[in-house]
Length: 273
Image 1 (tube, one colour):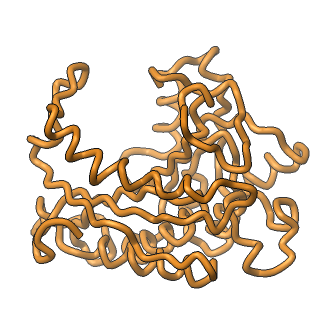
Image 2 (image 1 turned 30 degrees about the horizontal axis):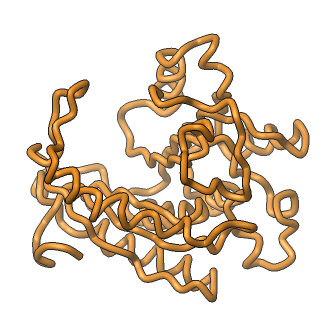
């Protein structure tokens, strides 16, 4: 961790450098998180962090932001790596925040907890992160921006030759549902535009508690319509886990990034999304 270990924060960044749940990828992709936060933030702070459209500078805001560095993750055993991710995240999540630490919050203990932003890593990391979050809050609603469903049954996605292989970047939400981590019928995808094994994939997605907003809907209902769908589905009163895969954007907006499995699905959102 950078900064005093005894310090308190409100927003925390942690990294998970690993690709253990994907196939046919360039491993270096997972290490992009290093410049994305720590070194990137120092560069932006030096040149000025003021954002004109938002009329805000996050480095001068009320929130204290701390880079917590990398969660140590083995590259040899995906089962153990998933346990490391859950434990490392929970250590950060359960510390007292810098802001509102004395106020009553929505966690199981009634405390206000830090807001943790995690940079992967492949999308399999969502399962151990949800386990950590649910341990603190109980079943959680999910907003998932992605071009893929990631709720596939293991037999459909990857074949599940072993129990370890059954947990991967296309099945983690299925496992989250089976483990009772997801709040019932308050979860939603946005940006979906992938090919399927068949219509049953959408049926299984509904079984897992998700509603789907396809990428093409932006042409009919617009950005405001998509936002309205998300708010109507998830609500505004309970804790929410936000998960974002870069491939929710069009490949043209991810220059220099190797999308998982080469799944460069065109037709995604642009820079203005």
